[in-house]
Image 1 (tube, rainbow, N blue to C red):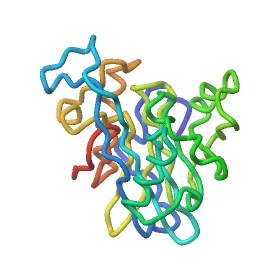
Image 2: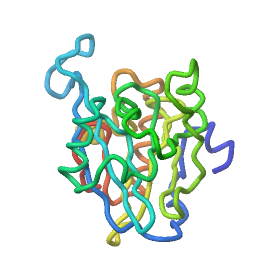
Image 3: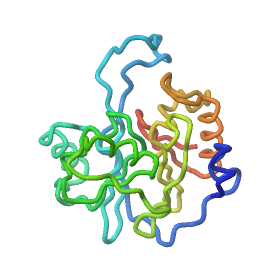
Image 4: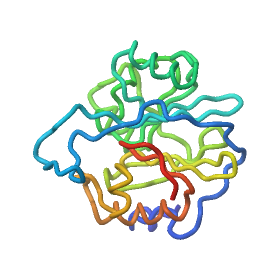
Length: 224
């Protein structure tokens, strides 16, 4: 991606991202997220109606197990959800990827002290301020483990990035809050706290051209 494309906020435009070097063996939703308030349920944006939870996803292949947006702060709770959905333990995770800096997407980071923590460079800069965590979040390369593309998806936050990979002949985008839920996707609408909703709509258009399946930030996955 050129600097001009990034500043224009049109990630990958109409062309698909470069194919990853090798395919992912499997992926699983660990937690299905929910919003604290949902205008599609008739709820105003000025009040929280429930605790927020983001969707956590595991991406796995021979040699790595990558967890995206660990959402459960309690270590026993995080361990239970991971084991319930995959049979894995916390120590089985190879790396963590954070789509953006909001608290619900980093709530469970401390439960994974051993593997590296990745995000975009801009998100890492925000998260590393004030030594908030026990160790630093590292800027991710363009591709993780030669399999998973790190894709700029700005709009919800400026440094928001999503992950794209191929599995079973389908392209999957783990979108974080670039796509809050399927309802927001249908209307190309950002969540109320987005820094640039117009850019967010362009990002969703771009995701639609590069994905067969979208994993939103606060909902179950859906077909494009």
